[in-house]
Image (cartoon, rainbow, N blue to C red; front, side, top):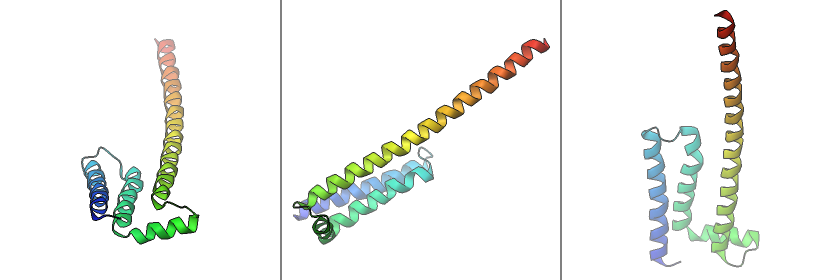
Length: 114
């Protein structure tokens, strides 16, 4: 892999890692959500510096073109992120419904007491 591409991917991975840490520090992103993103930044940095690992993974998977392995894992990563947030949204929707029902019951009780 040309040195320019290695350097660019390393800088992108490093930027992602620093950006996620800054989001956590400013409390824009919770720590439990940041772990997967931090891990992805580290993996990008490692694969950009150690291209032989990517070639080795491609051979194990039977891929002809090693960068296609990155696209495959990127797609899997995005699918897991989407599933994770779908689960979180479902949980939050249930919590909002329960809170709305409790508030309605409390308000109905206040109206009867008046």
